[in-house]
Length: 384
Image (cartoon, rainbow, N blue to C red; front, side, top):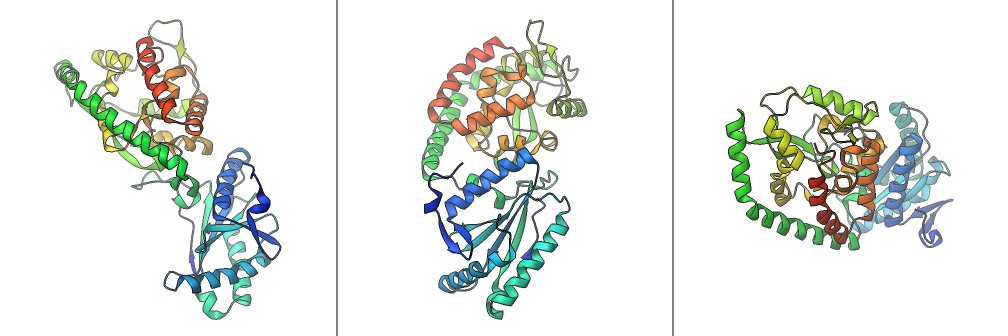
């Protein structure tokens, strides 16, 4: 038997139709089991009690028929080593079995793994043939998972998000429509805005030293990092620690409203930021500094509409439920937050707006947000 350690990286409409039997446990079908993983993630976000996903496979070098028989044997004996409250299902139909151990109160992951591994491996060794036992591969995945921002690629553990990585057919069709809208829209806007790009670039070069474009690592969908583009609105070689300290306090809810450019409205933003140039203040107030992100959209790193992409040090300060804003949809240039609250709402409310967009997204909603964006930009309240 082989063991892979964790990567430190709705109510059911008719549940009676969704299971077969393995001993006294119900074995959920693949679609239902993956929905249960999504539900358990949200429950953990509220309760802060972790859960453990165990995946069992019967080897990659044998026939599908033989693998299926081995998994059937595993299902017949697995209930002997788990609790009645644990959930069994097909993680991948006829290829991988999953078990969710929920309601874990112990914070010592190693102790939990040791107890579960000993019980499961002892049961399998006693009940299976030696050939079947040697073919079993087990991996463990804790949620909340560790997000390591120092490593390249996605920091999240894909095994814990199967419902997000492989959307259903209806959502796939809508995502194709969104991709076409992004590709065509960003291409046309880049062509139309070329003269404006040249004017802004010339103004930046003549007003302060440094490059025209500001490049920064941002976190996109599923935690993938990409190079984010903006027109430079700050002095070159500035100290980002000022923003980092403010962002961590903002996420924790430890900052207060600040007056916005002399307006009556107050905002949650870094006031009188000394890093910003005089031209940069105008570019930010009018959101013209965001135009180079059309290139990010054309490349597929971003969408025209979606949550703003996070900076890695911001993501490191997120609560578990905050992470969903960078998991469920691709980041965008504009979004529901920008056309409703912008910087006038607290960070938690911004996240709720992003999650509301993620759950209610449609091409028509994108069009409505795009149509409302110019008015939000002209209003300028909360621009940053």
